[in-house]
Length: 70
Image (cartoon, rainbow, N blue to C red; front, side, top):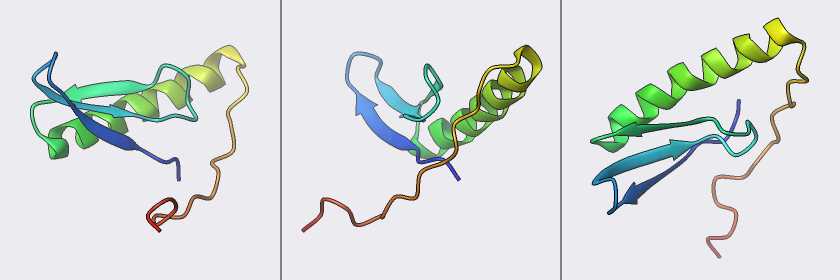
């Protein structure tokens, strides 16, 4: 499973969700939940397109949910 980062953008007045391991894969939502839903769709399309055009698909990195919280 790929890591997903979600943050609030004052400029866009909503939430941006990104998948750091998939270059350019991001989505917008008025709520965190909507941004998450949208980025899941974007991620699926990114992966399908990469396979269709023969682009290498990165292997998801294992990340700790508590990394950096100490």
